[in-house]
Structure formats: structure tokens, C-alpha cells
Image (cartoon, rainbow, N blue to C red; front, side, top):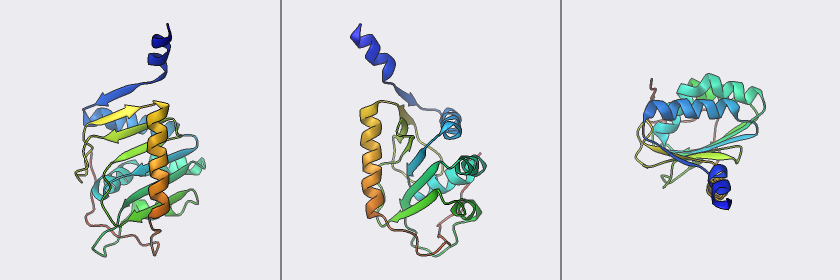
Length: 168
């Protein structure tokens, strides 16, 4: 029936477990073909980039466009090696926003996305909604692109951070 076809095409999966979120994110990142767009909070972005840096570099070597939007830091501390390593790739770009984002999400290849259920800035992910629903993915990608146009390029290659955060 038509409803069965729609349910096979469009998925929404609530992922409450941190390890499951990490495993799903790693699989999606490894399989990205065209683009990764991540808008997040500072601690979470720093932790995510630190944890996935080798995989992200593999993706960038394959010429996948990788863009991140995150809030500016009020401190003037150096962001760290993982970001410096990524900045060497022409397909990596970072933009900074003056305010804290109201949503934390990542879109891959304009085909699927993660949406965090919390905008609290912790290094660990909160329960997350995964979807490949075209309407939801397009909405998130369009919102990302709008904020990207408003966000600022870092003034120097040395980006600042509040805390060095990693996770296991």
C-alpha cells in the first residue's frame, strides 16, 4: 500500500544511548560522499572533532565538503591540533556565530541528519533523533545554509576555545 511505501522511505529513529550515537555517527561520517554540515555548541563540537579527527581527515582527503558552525569563544585560547589539522584541507570550513545556537544538528550529503534533543553545552551527546526524511533533512540543511551566510569566518587560523575536551 501507499502508506507502507512511505514508511519504508522515511525514517525517524530516537537514539538514547551515547555509544549508539557514536557508532551511528562514525558510520555515517565514513560513508559521506559530498558534504557534512555540523552546527553545534563549543564543547560538543570540540569533543566531536577531537574524537573523529582521523576519520574526518579521511573524509576530507576524499574531497567531501565539511563545514562547521559554532559559537565564538570569549577567551583567547588556542583551539587545538584537531582543528589545525582540518584547516589544512581546502574542503574544510569553519564559521563562528556570536550567539549560542538554538539547535544542535548535523546533516550528511543532504540525505540524513542527527538532531540533538538538548542545546546544553556538554562534551557528550544527548539523546538524538536520526532521520532521513527529505523534508526534515532539507529544512535542517536550509537552516544551516542561512546561518552559514550570517556567521563569520575566523579572523586567523588560530581559533580559540574555552576548554580542551575529549571523550571516550
